[in-house]
Length: 231
Image (tube, rainbow, N blue to C red; front, side, top):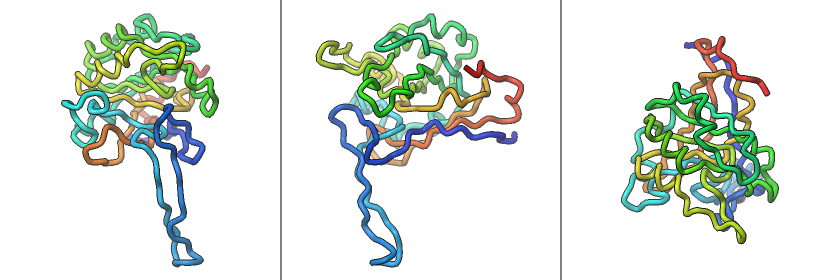
């Protein structure tokens, strides 16, 4: 297998990184400099779910696995991209969106929900993202899927004063199945292959609820003739 192309699916980590309301913000502070110490070294402050990151089941259930306890196979696998760009602001991603890819859903695949909402990253509108419907989440799990990602800040609806949400149903369902959630993906439109290899390997935080990742899609020669609609 030859890797022909690597597609970056990660948002940059800076002081401007958009975080879930109330989460720790990202800060880089010079700890050592070449002028003073002969080398550069940063002090880094951020939350376990800053930027593009993965959630462990422990994020929503104390009795489940933490990020360092999950098998690494949860974080690398063949990608199946679900086109949900028509869902719209606070729209539901339903089983109808899954229908075109149902034959490709099986244990080991990583499902990426392409909403196009990463275009609003860095703006207040980013919090009005589409979200995965409970029934659609249950269908993914029935097919053996254990890793699901979205190009938005939350797989479930992000609550606000007028719409308090539904209690994070997909987070709970996936936690019960020892699954993984990927959030704050970007550039899903940059994936040309219909069968990319997705890697979202987390930092090895011990006992944590989640960790930042450098999410990438690896396009290989084996998938060169299977391209997605480039829209």
